[in-house]
Length: 230
Image (cartoon, rainbow, N blue to C red; front, side, top):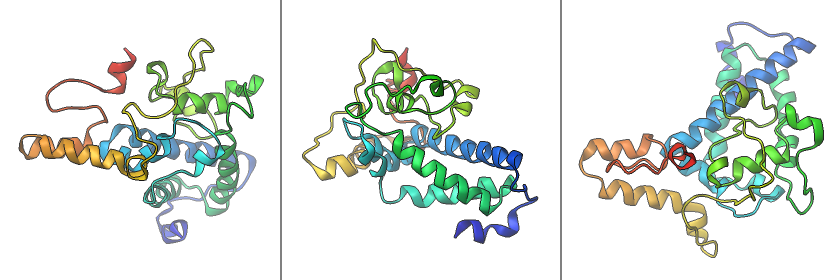
């Protein structure tokens, strides 16, 4: 739908050739990376994205665990970025099929595939091992490996983290979650944000809680992922 609506915005058309497909894939992955990074760095967007990270296990079912609003805005912005950079709908739709299959595979459980590194593929793909890193709350692994399929943009932006076999994965988010409560599992980050906004002094601090990264506080006590990693 969005690709059709935005058709007139495309400044040039990239042909569906081998190089056009590679270009389109890199553009699509750039859009994915930027939006995924923003979802971890803007508190309001994190509240939408956090449902996907709340589970303390990882399996293919987690790949479809999302807050209802998330795909709506992601689809809009991915379509916009691809359109403005000349990627045509046939290329995007082909990539979506590949991306959709691989994203689900990358969530495969450790019980099913204990070694998710997949040999030499781990050098350039987001393997299950790479994506397990992304879902882990270990300080070493926080906010790493934002790509979906190719690890290229993680490498470019300095966010590529390999699995350390000495570091056992601890999945989930950094706050305690009551997994017996659907409300806490699905809406807990919204509730936490509301409490932070309500307690914050002044309009400026209240607005900052919406746009600053998760872990930012108006008191100066840093709970940011970077501080935790250090």
